[in-house]
Length: 155
Image 1 (cartoon, rainbow, N blue to C red):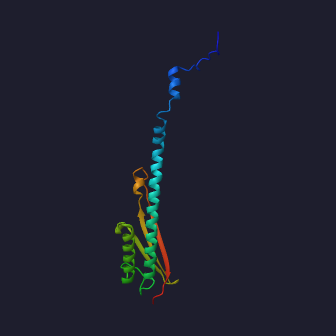
Image 2 (cartoon, rainbow, N blue to C red):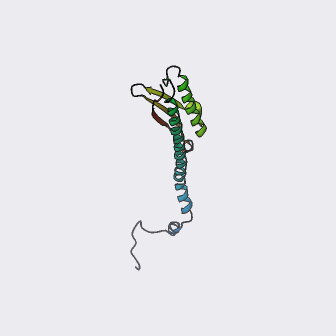
Image 3 (tube, helix red, strand yellow):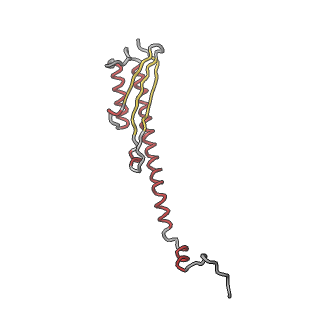
């Protein structure tokens, strides 16, 4: 009897030892595991940038619309908006559509006036969908909101 004693179940077969030492497919396997995560991060970065662009364009348009609304004679919006309020809403919607390319029907603009405080408010709500992330299974979107208040200066 020479050498180390044999332990049952711990013998190493030659073909198994050869397979354990081979590393030829390890890189492609690691790449295949990391690729979906990397693509989701890149797509998420693009979508976040697009959402920030839309939100910035909305904020600028709503600010301009509120300033216009603060100077019109009748900023109230009833069943039919006054001419000044309707024009402020129209210009705000046109600025958002021009800057973002979104569908005008999807943009909801709401002018309000608080006579007690003398403040007019313009608010825009835009549903935002993550187009790139939908391809990897992230379906839900969100609603971007921009609001601005101005003191009323017209009589």
